[in-house]
Length: 227
Ligand SMILES: [Zn+2]
Image 1: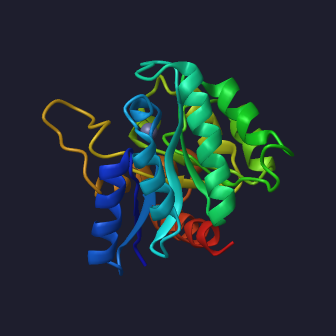
Image 2 (image 1 turned 60 degrees about the vertical axis):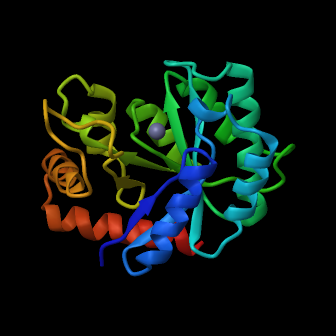
C-alpha cells in the first residue's frame, strides 16, 4: 500500500491539499496548517478557515506548523503564538501535527514536550525533514513523536540525521520528499518518487533492504493515523 500525505502551508494550500486528497482518496491524505513563513500574512479569517478544515475527515493531521528561525519570515513571537495555537487545534481535533523546525531545535523540542496547560492532552506527531541529532530524535521518540527523513539524509554533512537514522528503533521514523523543495542536483525535480531515494539511503544506513524500510514506514504511518 502506498500513501502520501500532502500538507498545507497557508489557507489556500490547505484547501488545495484537501481538494487533491478528495480527488485521490486511494493514494492521498491531507494536512492543513499555517507554516511559520506564512504566519505573518495570515488574517483571522484564514485561521478560522484552517481550523474548520482541520475537522474534515480526509484531513489526517495539522501541518505544516512550527518554527523557522533561519529565515524568520514571520516574527519569532508570532511564530511561537501560531505554533501553540495549532498544537491546541491538533489536540482539539485529535489529530497529529507535522512540525517544521529550522534552526529552532531547542524551542521546538521544549514546546512539544511541554505538558499540562495550555494543552490538557499530550500532542503527538512528526518532525518533518528532521535536521537535529540522535539525542534530540531519541528524546522525541521517548515521548511518542516520529521523525521524518528527506533527501538531505544522503548528504555526508548531515551527521546528526544520519546518526539518528542508524540508531532509531523501527516504528519511530517516516520518509518524505518535502517536494517541491530540496531537489538535489541542478535541474533535478523533486517529486514523489524521490521518496525511493530516501528509502534507499535509509536502508543503506540501517543495513536492511529498501523493501524492509517500505514495510516499516507503511506500518508506522498507519499507526500514526490510527491512534
Ligand atoms: Zn517544512
